[in-house]
Image (tube, rainbow, N blue to C red; front, side, top):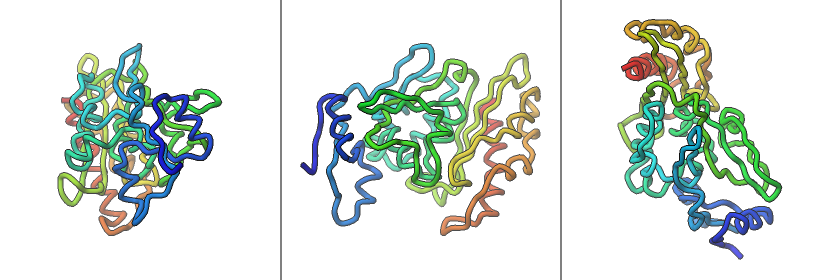
Amino acid sequence: MDYARPQTLTEALGLLASGGRVLGGGTDLYPGAGARLSGPLVDLSALAGLAGISRDGGLRIGAATSWTAIAEADLPPALAALQQAARQVGGRQVQNAGTLGGNLCNASPAADGVPPLLAVGAEVELTSVSGVRRLPLSAFLVGPRRTALAPGEVLTAVLVPEGALRGRSAFLKLGARSHLVISIAMVAARIAVDGGRIAEAAVAVGACSPVAVRLREVEAALVGATAASAADRVRASDVTAALSPIDDVRATAEYRREAAVELVRRAVAEAVG
């Protein structure tokens, strides 16, 4: 069979264990298929349990949750960056069909969903006929178009710990235009302020390395700073030292480094509010 649309997760996992290929929203799979989409395809769109957002201590986002649903959800300010990213993933049609799980499994260095999720220490839930396991998102993404998914596994949810839901966040993306474009550089920053000083900082940059990365030196320099001086505490050397950009048709590596520094400062300032 070239195509199957299972009605239960158990049925879907059985098909995947036999070598099936996951079809979610299809916004990456179809354009990359060329003249013919090869199977066997396991369409997960009928599995209602894979979509939706719930609170149970932390936050659970089903892998099949659409970008539109994320953008319109009632989420804490710490996930404002994810919602800002959701509004910039392609056009409205892509946002309606595309899923968070598909964005992560596609593993593009410029995947818009990754920096906001790194900034909240997200984990992924991976399910197969053998059981369920969890990995930090940073360990799940192992290179361009490469993940830690084992054969027969499917990403079923993204998990955000309760402690990472503190503070406010912001997402900024630079491209040749504001929408319908692959990023030259993008940044997500989450800042928690206590008593006028930064108590917690998380900053991630995408499209400037094989996978998006957290900027640990930048984060350490921000903690303890006053809210008013936050952007001034971002040193260019701390940003660029963590990145390994490439030259391509969209920008040179040097331009990406310079852009990342400016985007980090702006995102931090916006997250501080």
